[in-house]
Amino acid sequence: MEKLLFLCFIFLSLNTQALDSDKLINIDDLNILFDLQKKDWNENVLFLIKKNSFSKVDNDSDTFYLKSIFNDGEIITMPIFSNNIVEKIKFEYIFLDNNNENLKIINNHFNLFKNFCFEYLDNDKSIQVVISKCN
Image 1 (cartoon, one colour):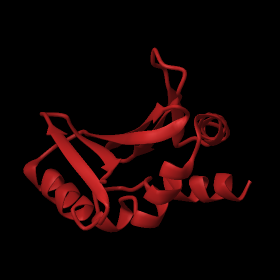
Image 2: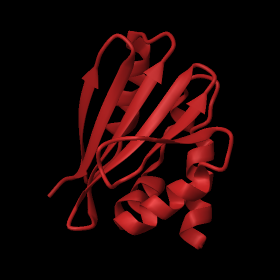
Image 3: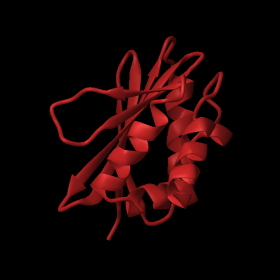
Image 4: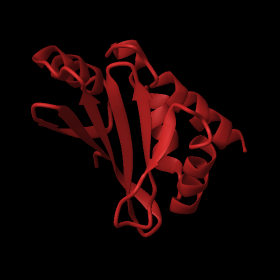
């Protein structure tokens, strides 16, 4: 239950009016997400979708994706599991007005995290960040 409340706090902090590095996920929250098992993740998503700012994203997987809505767009959090353990986490930041500054803010923020590797995919409407633990 403690993890559930903490996860709720994490995702509520993502509900922001504009992209601000202070509102992006921090290293402690990221570590907690990597510690979750698939069953725990799915149960937490089912709890969070009861809030107006969250919804479950349908996909072809047995893992739920979580969409957090903010004034200028939305964030979809998509954990990728291997043997019930989080292998990667993909965040898709979808903006009503995407610009190069958004990628710069996201890139600078995530590059501060030690022991994590990041891959960035950028297009006209979204920025995807795929995060994994580095060996």
